[in-house]
Length: 95
View (spheres, rainbow, N blue to C red):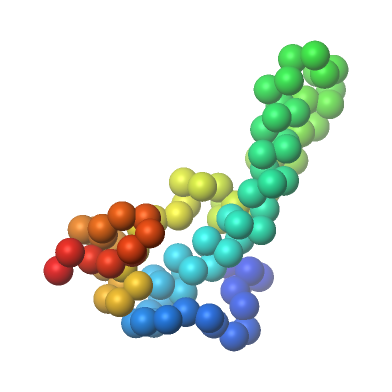
């Protein structure tokens, strides 16, 4: 994870390790999203040769886990809470 973390954080609100990690995951996902989509398209395209599709599968499986969309959790930017967060766009806890 340290390989992806930027030297200067551009986070507003309460800063703790959970928020830093969440921010890092969002940035890494945004950076590699198009590459992941392209590899997934190649894997699902049945008209391509099997060898090409297998190479795409290998590349996709070797990508860092932070590039997956399932790694991103909705977390409150004010308090860092992971539960009771209202919506994707607000990112505020109900408490």
